[in-house]
Length: 147
Image (tube, rainbow, N blue to C red; front, side, top):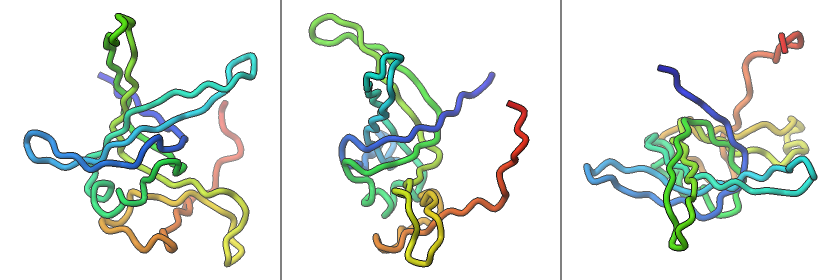
């Protein structure tokens, strides 16, 4: 058995909601819009339903997941097919998130560092909005990748 993992970068389509399963387990849920261009250069948008049972995502961090916010989601995909009210089959794209990150908008920070992703999978309680922790990779990327 193999597991699929994916990484998506997009924008939240609505504010995150904290929900509870029938067994009382809390999770955070939101939609993510991922834009791409087809071969003719036309913009298309795929919508993903994202849920996370990670305690630090459900805790105070969920308050930062607002409509329009940029977000990188890493997780396991699943798909569902349903029939709409017009009898047309529709596909649901679902992701169970294992990690969330806020991308920076580029440029440099006040201390002169280049912008990096702000990782959301770290502390159980979120810091103040103005001082989200930054994620800095510890290893340099390899220049001689085999592909």
